[in-house]
Amino acid sequence: MPDPTLLVLASLADGEKHGYAMMEDIQRFAGARLGPGTLYGAIARLEERGWIRGLESDDRRRPYAITGAGKRHLEEQLETLDQVVKTAMRRLRPA
Image (cartoon, rainbow, N blue to C red):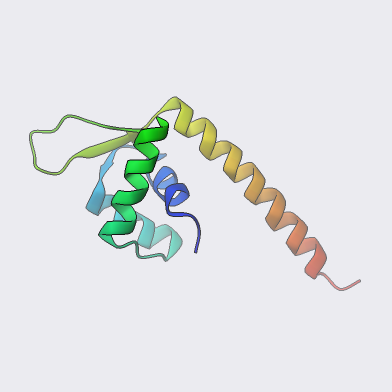
């Protein structure tokens, strides 16, 4: 299963979401079901690193948004993953 922090960043890449919306989005695009403890632990780590920020809300559900630093980190991680996938696919091909 991919790193929950990477999944949260990927979910927020297309716009702000609250926790439940992120869980549903991640389930749809990654097939991974994050429990509340895993999700909110990842959110806390991402906020500490300045990669996401909580937004004000009149509702009890707090939305989050990815920051510029979070977008750069996500892009770097995706480049690394892309290289890993390309290498693995090349190595799986018969010689």
